[in-house]
Image 1 (cartoon, rainbow, N blue to C red):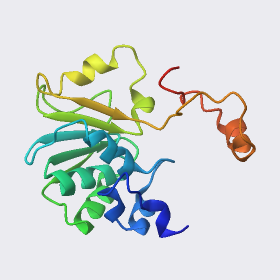
Image 2: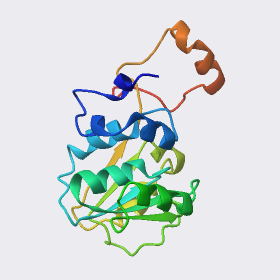
Image 3: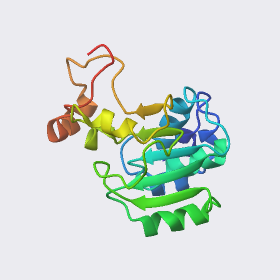
Image 4: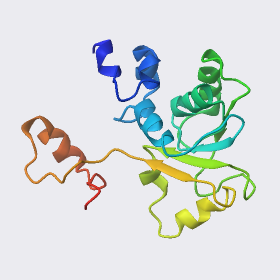
Length: 182
């Protein structure tokens, strides 16, 4: 894999991060830094804000948010070890600004209104599908604070699966990947 695959004129901030660091921390199929940078364009993040990064995986998005915007981030994930994430956070020089938490998104250990913003990068489909979940989650952000969700999806629906995707499509059957129009 070439380094150029991680460089994009669309995502200038994310393109400054080393490809090996990104690859070592990716937990899904999408580039978490590109998704985080894209979402951050809509969030008006300011230094010192408290941000919940829910379903953060290996905390790459959390580190990115802290380093790029000066926010404090609670990197919360059920599947990935807080001990592993704190080491990655230390190695990135983000200790004191990113706080790893191992926690279940359906039983969050935070007080209501604690966060200035909540983000979920490429993970909301694992815990947020209950009709009432978003109301539960919104309790943890201050009134008027944003809840931003970025997921992989399609620009348009796929009727005929391309040959290069056929094996993955048959094995994984991506029921949750659709276009905005869908």
